[in-house]
Length: 146
Image (cartoon, rainbow, N blue to C red; front, side, top):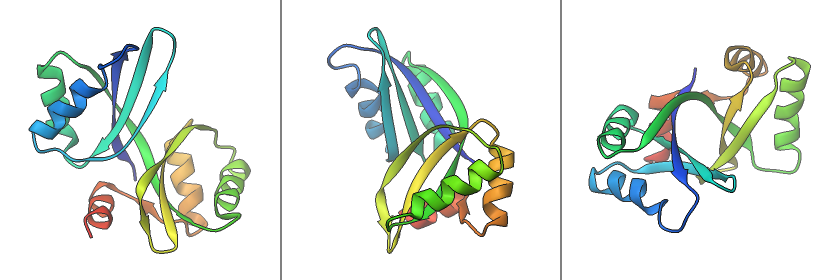
């Protein structure tokens, strides 16, 4: 169970982040979460939106280079050790965490994190076996729109 993430390649200079965000806003597409990673010359804007196909189309029609990646959205208990427990499950399953970032919304006593794993399928299997709530696109949208 994965969620589609859009990765947009940007020049690392003032103002380039505004363009894709404006395009999505004008298309009525809400950004559910994002992360920005950079090097000296370029940046990678990673986004999760509910209408990812429409977002991809809008961005590409306006000259953006977009890559689609599967990530895993997880509920993590929001208390000391909540993340450690999750990481220990992944460690025991031999799954590497490539990167992660958080959603801005909090769900009661839980937070939402997006993960990119070396093997998403193995990660989901191990996490679900340990009773970790893995969210698909529809469930994620429902949770964030309540």
